[in-house]
Length: 432
Image (cartoon, rainbow, N blue to C red; front, top):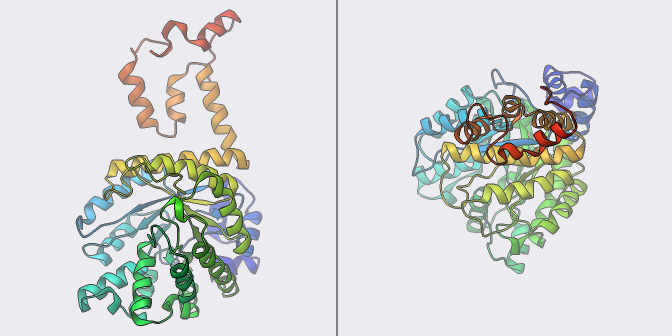
């Protein structure tokens, strides 16, 4: 039985109890929102030693970290190191986007070491194997796609990105309209090439009921991918993007009716003044399904700094109601990220999510900031480091640029405002 079917029957699952414990909310509230489809708990029955997380309404904004091999860097060992770094940095979920080396072996190694929900994009493996076996991505068959989905579900993958909304109708609208960057989704491009070559409908849309049957059997959460997400600001919020979202909204309802958990992915490159509208349109068309956004990136000119552009957009999106942020690393648009890039990306994304959680009134968010404020007032450097979102970096800066005996820091030294005002008011620093 899937989480959504259990919730509808009034059953409280161990996964719901764990989510309620982590979020510090009533388990009955979690169950109600899972039943309504407003919260998902990606938890494949075959994922051993999974510590589940909830994604959706009223819960802390979650952060996903992508990793995976490429044809240029096919070594799974590098990705296992990135997995370790991402988890240490606080990622809530991981996605394996491998496209090089032994894809099955890499995924299984990651799964075995991944205590958080793991996602994949099955069409990557189907397309790559078709190219290896038959010489072309367009030689992929519908059976290839569903065979990979079945295999990954059986392995224990908790959620899958499937670009079901890239339909012939949507592509026709894209061609009539035109775009600067066309299609930047890798999975979306694979399916687009296949559809145009064969002049046939997207198999994931045409055989959506078959997809639902597999997901229901293993309780795999569907993440309806945005194959037409804008890849530059000039393409944001255009007709093709919105047309795909309309299709995804209809598929959300079909998934819920079938007892399958479902969330929806969103843009992309979006200017600041369009982010809130994008979130509200998604929430309306998709009946409050959890919204999973990449960024959004708020400018196109920041190679090397796109973790910052994404954090800016992510904070605004989450404040407007997005539930799940996919990190972007400094290497975005440039190269496969290193382990350090992964760490920087996770921390930046977590900052965006937390900034939004303060505004959304998420349980515990304000408490964290208040404790930090008290530690700063008390000049309690150890507690400040312990409370920092990145204690390693905070400790490094404190130790590198401040004498051990110094009570204040070398920015202000003897002119530390908090220390001086405390003296003027006759107060001594109080340890928290």
